[in-house]
Length: 568
Image 1 (cartoon, rainbow, N blue to C red):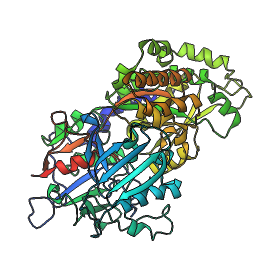
Image 2 (tube, rainbow, N blue to C red; image 1 turned 60 degrees about the vertical axis):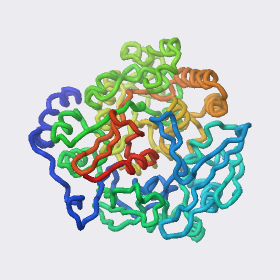
Image 3 (cartoon, one colour; image 1 turned 30 degrees about the horizontal axis):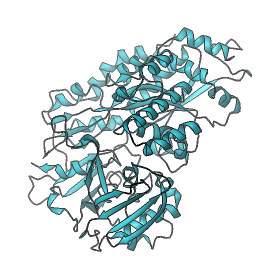
Image 4 (cartoon, rainbow, N blue to C red; image 1 turned 180 degrees about the horizontal axis):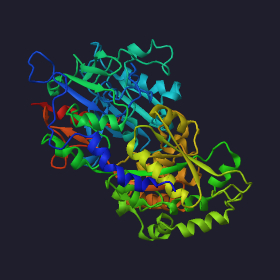
């Protein structure tokens, strides 16, 4: 009999790391990029916000395909809400905002004296133009801001007012995610949807692309940045990193300064290599198996739509084993059937948690019985379950290539499903294709993680709001499960005026989603953040928790972190 993936993993994990990684006694070396020690050369911060299949000259901040240093660093936001400081507003292009008493209007006061990188003044015309742009081209609205807007008007050169479609006490948090682009440049763009913005004009601290080839690009300072005295780094360098293996091989050589990727057994295989190698792993969100509720095969879709099928799948999985092997112990098993992160346990009703706990618990006997009741039986004695019609039952699992923890998880899930007679196939694609296939429903099941917020609302809203199932939105709600009750609860949260009302709404969301087992939550992971103190100081960490330290694209607080860094 073929040996299981689990046993093979234990046999070969030592060989893999002994061969692939350097001995722990080897010290890091500096990358071949300029450093502050070379007086004639610029100080360069090397960042790895995400993996890419290739480098393209795309700095269009409205598209999901833009280069990962586009947001914040080229296009500065109006306001950054600091999640580690109780959502304190950190004012950037705006200097203030105010809500009307009925919560249906919001005014932004803009910063005077800000120039675009080409020297033209930044005014309310730019903000007005940017909001009108997503009204005209919905494909550019990746944050669903249009769903909030009724109208927008300029009150003065440095004031705008937005009228909302409905009262929303949290509207500013969503509105400030819109990239603000220069009207004088973009008004001449014939097709903003396909425009790659190869020579960007921005208000952020790093707007000048000084070099680019197939292996890296370099992005240097904005000569007209309004807060130039706070910028102590000359350039950002983004090297092409295609997958996790590539990343691990290079980070231990000291090439990178600021990263956010999975490293197995991080203490042994990263921190021990140099006293300059550090990490911080704040609690993060859930990794879940999602189903495609509009899968093309009609019979398979009817099976996926049955809650008992999804519950049976959930009870097949040994969640702690997934963590131990795929995440190297970095995480905890999902406790809530809704997928809500354990960091929000105080928001959870214990009775609801216990009611649905059996479906989050390993119980292959019960899973087998439920699958039998659904007539998913082995009808031709080949060892695999079939659909009621007799057609083979096969679940494909889609993951991004190079995401080692996801791909290992997928292989483990396949083995666990095999134990109850369900055949699976594992499909790995580049991330761009992965996101596109999710967007257009070209998959059966897939693995995904979710964004986090100050409350559980961001997870529930991004993951289950049916308004976010259009192609331009991120992958999180692309299971295509629609429930008007869930949509109504999500719509009511921003208008709730008391803490108890908001807690009640979260409780209802938690129970509704858990009762339907819309996804199968697997485990809560951590936020990956690594930093190298060899060349720079000022890093945010557990002893200096100024703001979120994540370098990931569209993590607004990364701008605050960048401005805090100083070359040694």
